[in-house]
Amino acid sequence: MPSVTVPEETFSRLAERAALLKISVDELVKLELDRLARSLASPSEPTRPLTGDAWLAELEAWKRDAESLARRLPPDFVLEESRETMDREREDEQLT
Image (cartoon, rainbow, N blue to C red; front, side, top):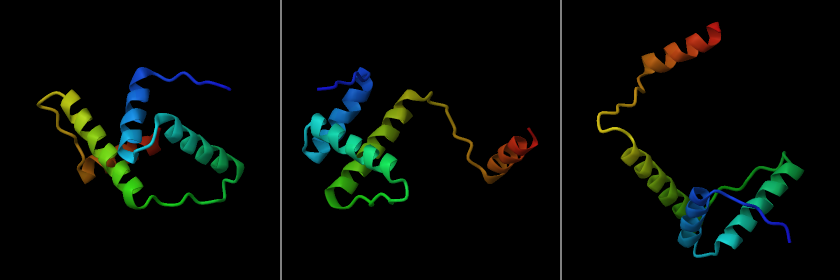
């Protein structure tokens, strides 16, 4: 059987997500690889939206990722998200 090596950090995130879904990491990876293989085989087929527990698990994982990022940023970090900044960056990209 083929095997894949993943970084420890990636495996930890997969283990957390699998635990939320109450499945093994192997099952989660198999599901995702199957989904990826299907999408490569038929790119016109839209992916189905998550529902129920799977959707909630994805939301919880996203929130944990955001909280983890917030803990790694400096205390005085401020994300510049004003409309003026976004427009200026877009204009600068168009000029280059």
